[in-house]
Length: 219
Image (cartoon, rainbow, N blue to C red; front, side, top):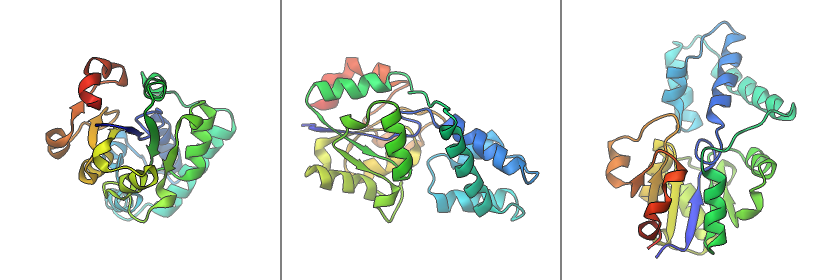
């Protein structure tokens, strides 16, 4: 039986991906390169190391990838400091409130850094709903490695089989599946691959669509 519900943040709860894309595009443009949406789409859900290799190959080694990342992070923080908002994805806040009100323990497993996770969740008024938060700062191996989800389960004092996970990316869903959790996928940028489609419990267009299946999801 499901006792705990784990959410990803970027692309699942919050629509940060379009903002990140604009920051990458601006950062690359400063050095005369065009960071296309197609490239961004390929990078979504990848670890920093893997996406760095992809970007380096895409630009044939001519773009300073470390500088690109540094400038992208600076642009994102500049956007946030200047009052830029990050929207919830459709149905996200309502889903968090729904599970919390029904007594499930909520956790968050994010590939983002702790500072941004705490800031964004607090800014959007949902930080206090989560009993456990695990970020990339807390693990050695990023998604699709299951470490983040296994660490969340450990902090919850739960078995993976007691956890329902919501993810948007292929890497995130793969991590939760390999960890042994029940996984629902709500894609934003990239559609699930064959492994995720085969092993995910459900794939939804929106978190608004989960309620007719609720008895099945938490049984």
